[in-house]
View 1 (tube, rainbow, N blue to C red):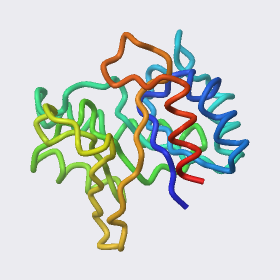
View 2: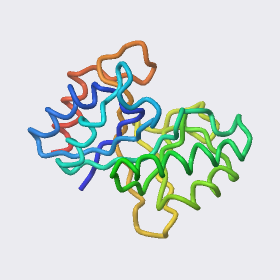
View 3: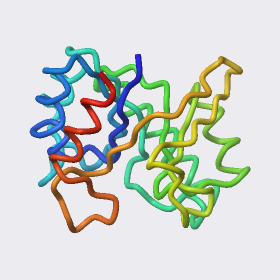
View 4: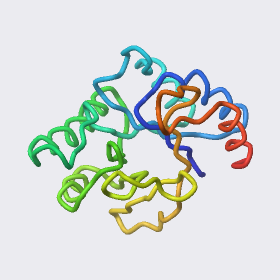
Length: 178
């Protein structure tokens, strides 16, 4: 089943996207910044648990959302590895990773491959160009036939973000996927 991807763990994923998707029978994957769980404008642990009960998946988006290509490889590995471990300690099965800012390079890919089954980005590897039709590139590390693209939503009705989607457009997207 096609799953809409949501980055960062914004509360609007729960308050705005989830009700629409539930009504239409759609599921999502939330890529969570671990140290933002329960903070202002981000989902709480109980909201994440509710989504998982409803068939959603949780993926990692690091502990703190750094540009992994701009920090040391040791720091990058710490963010990548420990975010997965922290989410698993909260009870989630975490198989996938989303590169913060869509930025990655060969060294970062090698680190991610050590801990995750697959990862995705929403930009070219330098983070400068959004991929066609606001869909993600998917890196399949296990050689599974998983070469589809997934719709990506960064934020809903939060115009301060450059990759925001208005609620009515999100509804249209969901209706196209049914």
